Image (tube, rainbow, N blue to C red; front, side):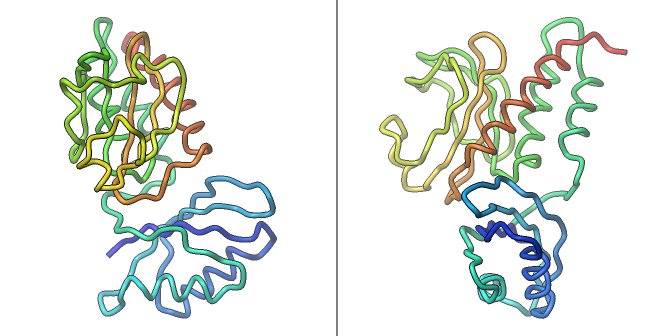
Length: 223
């Protein structure tokens, strides 16, 4: 079974090699590594690993933290295909789906594929504010239709942490972490996951960049 391990590690040469060695000695295979951010002498890495059937998930934490200075921020199951070119494949698919009229198919594709790109649980594309309307949603997305969102219309990208006052009580119990960015006039893309970890600003900037390109690609006429 695949798991996503988020590590905070000292930002020095050889640290990822040491982590890979520790995991390998525990019989754990690394599938992919994403460096989320660096600064303050530390780096934050997302590592997707395959856990043998006879190993408990806790063994991942134990193995990783045998490396001095390594801290496990979160561990959660990871589902879906793994791909080091996720963003490019999404943009190519959006270009193929674009039409001269309203890009409904492209918007649905964006919502469906963004969770895979960001290792998140779900994504939605929203418009309006009181109440809002869902233009597209991925599997597992919570229901936004009819909600009043105090941050819509969205004027800029923002993190939407799980303790925000506007969140329904059920969402707070789920520790629902979200981030959002504008996607055209009066429209926003929201990505979320339950139980953390909280989204980092580096992930938010990546979402801004990707959705900005996606907005342009989705409105291009087909080749």
